[in-house]
Amino acid sequence: MKVIVIIPAAGLGTRMSPMPSAMDAKTKKPHPSKQFTDLAGTPILIHTLRRFAAVEEVSEIWIALRENEIEGFRERLTKEAATDAGLRNKKVELVAGGEHRQQSVEHALNAIAAAADDVVLVHDAVRPLVTAEIIHEVIAAAKKYGAAIAGLPAVDTVKQVERTSEGAIVKATIPRAGVVLAQTPQGFHYSVIKKAFDEATADGFTGTDEASLAERSGHAVAVVMGSPRNIKITNPGDMELAEFYLSRR
Ligand code: C5P
Image 1 (cartoon, protein in one colour):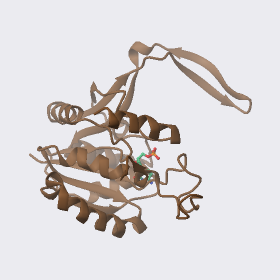
Image 2: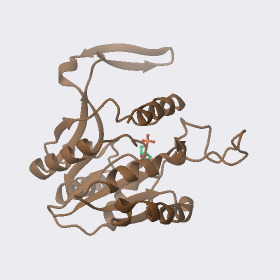
Image 3: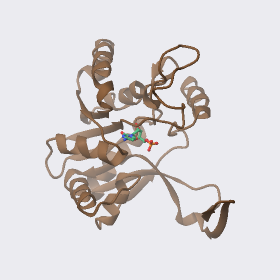
Image 4: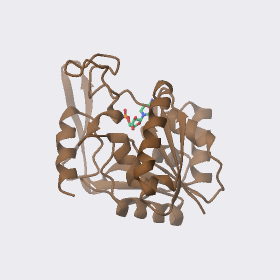
């Protein structure tokens, strides 16, 4: 049984910078996409990649990138592999991503060769603080249940709202005991994720994570404990928090 990791890393990350093509006032170079922004001197995507490369059970890592970023990243990978034994021992493949996250994952999914009970893990490129423990737990639960995600219990009270031109208006309070916030990694038997994606494509459904596709395909999805530190770097302020967590490791 293989464990194959897919890292969608083809987003523009427009909440981090105006546009990747816009010039950075300090460096006079184009703003990098969010996943290539330096975190403690190393691109976020490299941090994320190292986390998975260090896990023995992982045999392959597929990264979906924007077409024009593939060659540059391939060179960077060669340099990284020279000093990172974990990375040297893994098969790392680069594929072109799509317009949406789901398409990026789908491109990688279409490119891999897997058996029905191989485990496919999907992890956001911009969650570089994922731990080996969370990765192990998602793999174990995916093996056992066919589908599993890392999730975090909600500590804030969750409101359902209606968006109006004046702002949001609360419609209902959702009992937080029944809520978890979905993180990645999300893991699936290959047969489960492939069927879920084929059905979503046939129906024109787009979800914001892979589990939502498995759910609508009728598969139960188990939840293992994520971590408040497994943040998805989205806004500039998240970089400071991520640097702080990294420095405390
Ligand atoms: O933009 P968002 O926060 O949804 O991005 C989540 C992850 O999906 C990021 O790692 C991003 O690079 C990736 N993504 C992608 N292809 C896209 C859009 C986002 O691989 N077209």
